[in-house]
Amino acid sequence: MITLDIADVARRSGLPPSTLRYYEEKGLVRSVGRNGLRRLFAENVLERLSLIALGQHAGFSLDEIGGMLSTKGGPDIDRAQLMAKADELDRTIRHLTAMRDGLRHAAACPAPNHMQCPTFQRLLRHATRPPRQRGK
Image (tube, rainbow, N blue to C red; front, side, top):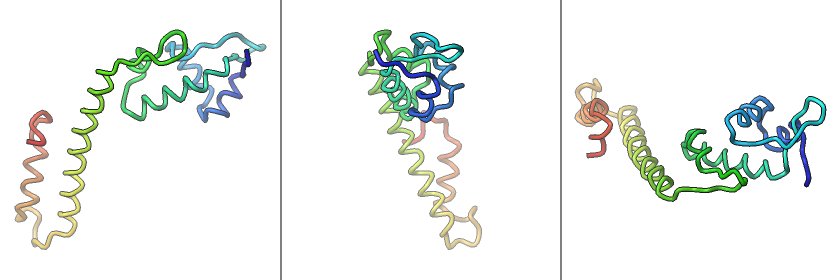
């Protein structure tokens, strides 16, 4: 088995050693031993760190990601959980797109005062709706 010390893992993954220690504390990665004071990791930790990064980029919490990583190292992913996250991202994209479009309109609006602009007024009404009613 090829092992990497924490400095090698940090260099190859781009993560600081403190993050690797935190991930180990949370049970997301596991060291396989020590070389003096330095933690040693199996080489497959890099793949596991990539899975963690992918999950974070998708908006999953570290606890959610931990639940998707089996103790054997590979993913154990709940497809329904992935679909729910994809639906959540769709809602976020729609909301952000509407906000972007509203801001662009406000920046180019010919109205002398934004409060006199009907489009800006719709944007204000949209902003004050509870999140579950947005997009309707």
